[in-house]
Image 1: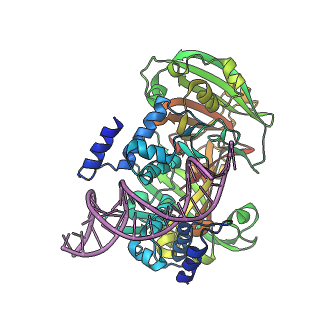
Image 2: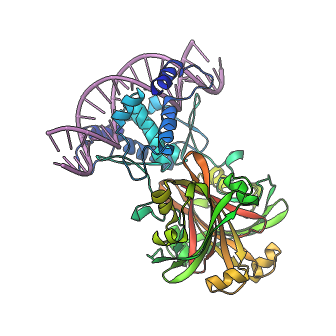
Image 3: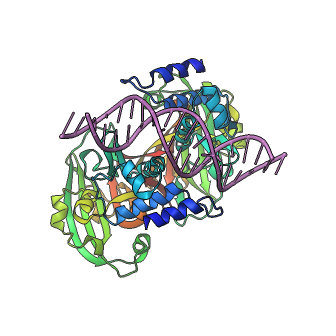
Length: 253
Length: 253
DNA sequence: GAGTGGTCTAGACCACCAA
DNA sequence: TGGTGGTCTAGACCACTCA
């Protein structure tokens, strides 16, 4: 199959219109291998030379494909060692998606308090955002995240039940609340990117009690959809955050 | 000078330690030309071939340097036409840094109401963030931004007076509130990237009156520092936003 | 020392654009 | 038709890692 794809490519690649560069085809092939689970997060993929041989293209073309996947945080290059599948399961990047920081950026101790982990059926807007039919079985997790001993975030997480069969509150506790790390190690699901929508809202009575603040206290409402390989949405998350001593940081480019 | 740099590079480039790739040196040279104003926003820079000749390196090396500058939104490539200095002064990207969107992402008419434009002296935290000494002369702009007829953002903008000599309220009005476009066309200052810190706050009395809401209404407090070429901070901005019908969108990668 | 990614070159050819 | 960026190749050599 690979040979055929590339023979086609080599013969037809410069037959505009609908021209697709070879390296994009290589990118698709690599992504398919990732989806198929040929290489798991943290593992090395074959060397550029070997992939060039397998795909019957030059090393430079494989290189360009890997360059782009590395720019998308899907692969990670390490000179002298190889190219690896990116992972959330390493100390320095376990919290890659956590954007809440204290004013001075000082180190903090994070704690996770599980409030609820139950099965349900999805509906409405959340179903649309996850690309699921209304009524699909989902798992819902509610938890509190504490920074240096103070509860700052109330999270409500919704994921489809099928890919996460066997997920329980106990497992969430075991992983100390690092959901993305757990998704990878336990369920082979890697989140590649996420989109967030942020609003300012007043705390309702229930949230206020959980976060130990007065009702009406201003909270940051962070709505997140996370995507796995192939831009497939796999997690919905609603966070309510206390931001009197902390802030959400982001960069515009 | 260029020859010398490159002769040094060609002879010494592979003399580890402190090895710097050639294309990084080219990047620095291109950035210096941008800072020096050799090419202005919207203009074309010389072709890859010409730059390769000028720097005495191969086209591929120039290409890699330009690739990175394009990834940083400093240059823009247009196949068949050339490579251009990126600009905020084009319709589709005038609002590149504006992250506030209505729920359905529908088009909106933006209006700018100037509240104040005055000179002052900088102090405290803002001085630190802009890398200025306390007491440096600055220009402060206060304005309201309306979306489809409703005032949603109260902006407070602080910029050093020196690079923006001659900036007046009238000029802000002329440019219809598109500050980044004005910085470029009138003062040759291009903002390349920005960092933001976001909090949720309750509206104070003054802001509430300006935005036509009740005091205590939850607002998004967006603090921004914008950087020009060479990562030099050039603008501080504090925005207070109504987010009942709108949200701030961002992407995590 | 062997193997990996990283840099640089030279050359061929294609896609796209403007005149 | 000529000039520009975009793709692809083949080869040489360097930097880095690890056994």
